[in-house]
Image (cartoon, rainbow, N blue to C red; front, side):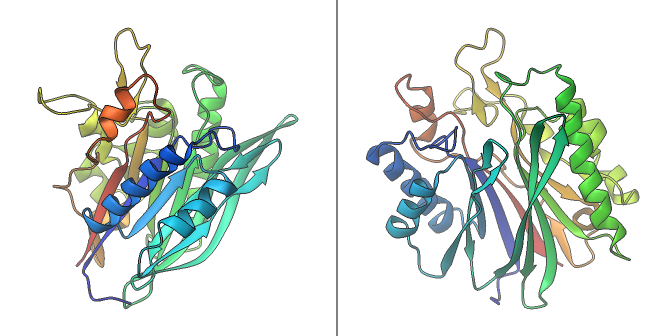
Length: 295
């Protein structure tokens, strides 16, 4: 394991394959390669989770975007009539992936994709980290008020609680993904128990801290986006903070690893916002990141 005392976790919904079948042109895939290079070479991402990638996309990225020291792991797997559509890229000198497992929930004849749990060992001390990577349904298919949105949050929390119960000390857990819900939605704030209250999380080990509350508003005229997802037809709001990275109590209490709180979570990649706003582009999300530091 490496000597660096910080780790950066990144999530990006690439938009390459929203239905598990790639719709990407070679130019689209090259854009994704350029973003990956930027995330690693400029932003120093240690672990990148990509969403909406197909097997073909993942193989292309593995061949074309090979970066020294970084390894790929394809997380694509079937789930009922749908798929988990992820690919993971990580610095093998700092992180080892132990396992990837699917968390699903059956409701009637339908199967809900709650998350993929990725178990890691990080740093020289080989500290266990647990990632829950989610891509919840689009609001086009599961509206804001749909009861299933509560189900996703409840079932994710059930999986988190089962993991916590296995540990004597609060474990290092990171939730990340495209929730198609803002931080204030009940699915995340009430059911997952992800709050904006940093001090309260430091006192209560069942709570999670969601730093993406601060990404809800545009604060500068020249700031390209005020969220992570662009919905062109929004009548009141076009930018939504659907992509988030959420941290457990252990990162806030900070005995071994702690969250970097003065961190720019929405990643401004040159050219990406411009591509998103372009009506002809397939892209509609920007990457998001979070950093933890060794204490």
